[in-house]
Length: 359
Image 1: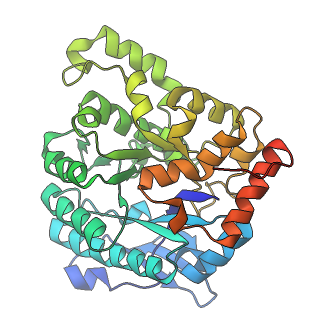
Image 2: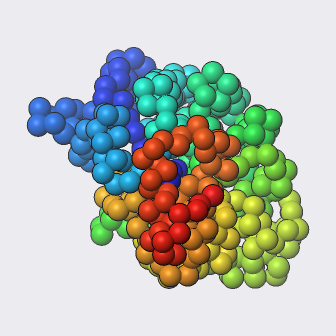
């Protein structure tokens, strides 16, 4: 079985948000009549997208072709809209979250879901998180690596973290609104340099701010293999030790120890990087993630995990599905089909010869 915890989706259409809220700055889809659509911010082109972004039936067909059994759906981060009026972001969140719930209702064995919430208003965010889990049946929510100029350990977010802890929520942290964006106009550097730094920013904030320890029932997962955190952990740990006056105000637990308490996805693009994050976080804390359907993701889902020679068959199976089920707090039996069982057998055979047992 393959479960992809990092898969983005949007509705095909949603209301005109400028008209609905009375001001602009929001993303809209402009369908071109060719089967594709343009994501537009006002009159500014953002990116071209295809039906697999909004059509769940097309998505299931592609998953079948790629051997993916389940996707954990989340919105495209540009939709976070933390800059907008809180009531408007809350309303938009409901539109997006209801759409994800509808997709799950259509394909209950193929999709799980993560909502989005108005993090600039933490009590509203807590309310929507509760609705996502208790009313819509989602596993948790996706949030950004920071909220406007506030890091995730800011005390303003305590009501949200408390609600997430009480609910035992899964939280997927995805970079957006990248630092240095305006200073890096060339070579796609915000995506290649700033995004990994944003993930490390979020991880360090949550660790050193005491959030990871204070709210132990929250299951945090970080996109893109945790970004640059693993590669700079030696420096982070050293700084934590040398400047306790700055780094240990909320916790004395080293970041290298706390790394074993969070999850990451597998989207690191390089077998050497995968081996390194396995050493830092532990193979049991890594779940398949592809960034579907975007080109910076893993275009052959699970290929990196399946191709390396340093993982056991059990570790592969764990990273392809077991970790995702643990993080989402879901039972394998709820998503198993004849096709997924056959795929698990094929994975086991490819890893260790003609043996058909698997967990």
